[in-house]
Structure formats: C-alpha cells, structure tokens
Image 1 (tube, one colour):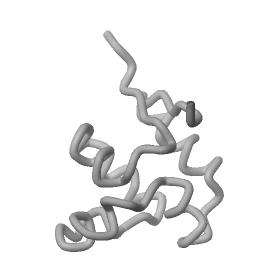
Image 2 (cartoon, one colour):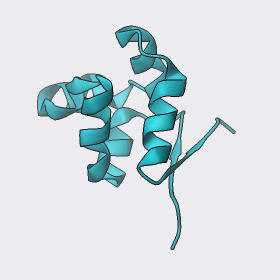
Image 3 (cartoon, one colour):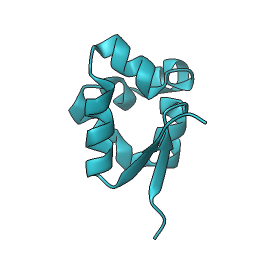
Image 4 (cartoon, rainbow, N blue to C red):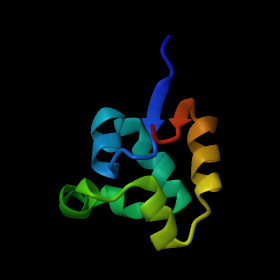
Length: 78
C-alpha cells in the first residue's frame, strides 16, 4: 500500500480534497478552519500547513508528528 504523501507546499484545500480523512487530524491539532467550507474554498486555496501553523502558533513539528501518527508521510518541499 502506498503511503499517503503530503507535501508541506500543498495548500490545505489540496490536502483536504486529496485526503478527506485529514480533516479530523487537523481539527484536533487546532487548524479548525478546515471544517468551514467557505473558509476552505477561499483561504484554504493559498494556506499551507507551515503558514497555518505560524498563524495559529502551533509548532510545525507538532502538526507533522500528528499526521505521521495517522499514517501520512510528510515530505519537505522539493
């Protein structure tokens, strides 16, 4: 089985579209804007995990660890 790969350069909109199961993980971390369709379709189209982490003052390492614990492979930017 292929690992579910997430690139830090992907927008939150792209992540949620590709992996709907990522939503509860992001909400648990504190990135709760992903549950708001209007916000997801506007800000989510340019918001990345690093930007969201900075905005919400959540360590990026916390987000990466939570995603990896759920079976995602988090890739650094190319």
